Image (cartoon, rainbow, N blue to C red; front, side):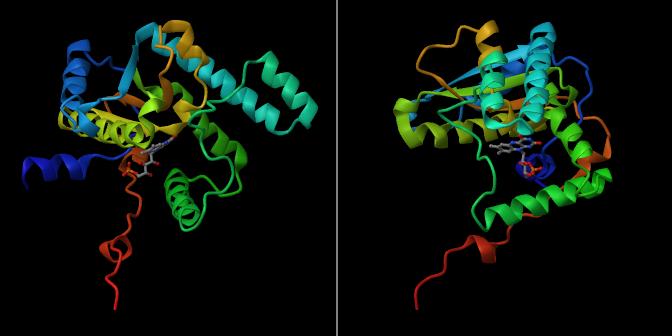
Length: 241
Ligand SMILES: Cc1cc2nc3c(=O)[nH]c(=O)nc-3n(C[C@H](O)[C@H](O)[C@H](O)COP(=O)(O)O)c2cc1C
C-alpha cells in the first residue's frame, strides 16, 4: 500500500488515549501540515486553540461539570431549567449548534447504526442510559487525551468557512495519524465556549465550530471500532434516463 492508503485506512476516531503528553513541536508539525490545506480563494478563515497540560485539564473539568449539569437540567421543568441555565452559565453555542433531537433521514438511521455498533462493542445495552451518559461524559475529558484543539471560523465567510474548516480538520487528522497519534473530531466540544474564553483571547468575530482530541491511542477495544460507511451505490447520484 502507498503512504496515503496506509494513513487513510488507519485513521479512525480514537476514544481512548494514553495520558502521555504530545511534544509541542509535534503538535506544531501537525498544524503546519493542516495549514497546507486548500481553502476558498486561500482565505484560511479559521483559527485554532491548542490546550495541553493543566489548562487542558481545567477546561476538561469545566466542560465535564457543564455536561453533568445538562443531565440534571434535562429532567427539570422549563422555568427551573432557565434558572439553572443562568446560574451555571449553560448557554450553548448559538452560531453553530449541534442538532438537538433527531437528525433527518437517512442520517438518523446512520447515526443510530453507528451508535449501536459502538455500544455493542462496549457491552452497553441500548436502554442503559446511565452507561451511555457515562460514555458520553468521556467526550468532555477528551477521552483522557493530553491535548485538545478547537476550531473557530469567521462566519463572514459563510459556507466556505465551514468547507475550509472541514478540509483543515481532515488534513490535521491524517497528519496526526501519520505521526502515530490519534484524533477524535468532536461536535460535543463545540457546545460550550465559556471555559475557552476564560483561558484564551479569542478574536471577537470568530465563532466556535468544533473540537478535537489529540494524543496517543491506547489498545482499548473502543479504538478498533470501524463503523459502516456508505458504498458507491449510495454515494453516487444517478444519471437521468
Ligand atoms: C464534525 C464531527 C463531529 C463529531 N463529533 C463527535 C463527538 O462529539 N463525539 C464522538 O465520539 N465522535 C464524534 N465524531 C466522530 C464520528 O462519530 C466519526 O467520525 C464517525 O462515526 C465515523 O467514524 P470514523 O471517524 O472512525 O471513521 C465527530 C466527527 C465529526 C466529523
